[in-house]
Image (tube, rainbow, N blue to C red; front, side, top):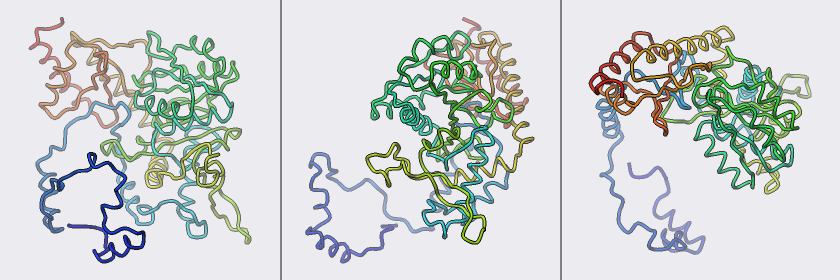
Length: 446
């Protein structure tokens, strides 16, 4: 396969001549010579389509599919009902993009409207946008919402947020001239509420996650109250799969709710693409970034859908825009909406209860092994928890021999474990047997 560009060499030369150039290299004359590759790319000879398919199939055969998974840390393995990928493969969904022309895009606009409705019902808030790129982007955009609402240049954030989310927030903050102040965790693994008030002077608000990175359920109502007491806003970063069993952001006073929609019917997919969701109170609706699909009536009184509230985007306000988000994750958003509709309130509650129950069962079994302790035994958690053990590396190496992915080893040596409805009790027993044998072979508890 040589090229997907249909232009012939003659076509290219004519286009170059039109812009006053003789050869393709003239387009890159401004790039210093020492930065250019001075040799051909190290690529194999071109293959036919059939040969390429055979090659990729061979790669798939030799790769292991993988066994039980006990790792989350931002991407989670949940059961995806078969109807979701089947419906998502329909061409009108699979090729959907930005619905610029309302008269040509009623199906896409309605799909986004339904997605927004689902997010509002999950979070309890008044308005949601048509999605952003992922959870980290949603958190970063929430920083800009806080800045625009209060015209303040300082935001507090919990150390319990996912480190990758924090990294993206810091990138946005640097470019936007925002000061970020970290709120520490206490010895129970949750945000120290007492640290909010002393740091709120000049702050626009607080961002915290529940469950946090370590799986601990945060005192979100207390954090929201502390932020509001200092005339600040509160942003809740939530795992949407928890909202069938835990309080909704609106229930504990959150002004903005954000998160990653990956748990809602999206496969892990090596880290993406995912879908970031954002919802807010009616008061903050005009600060939501990106696009919002709205419902209205046409001249004949028919129910129709349009794009609305885009005035803060770069392609309209340019340098005056408060956000440069001018797209959405259409396919992923549709799949998330499908998942919620297929599951319904009862299904969402059941999957949430299974995640809680199985994570606690696994934690109890691991805790019985000498050399392993639960780091935050008094703190409620959802589907993730941290254990401490001097054998973290050896445990994961032993599990890998059985194609099992164990907990994520943290920088401080702890292990972050995850269990979802996809894990069974027989897997727990097998894993614990392997861990026990590994620790015994190392000489027992140090």
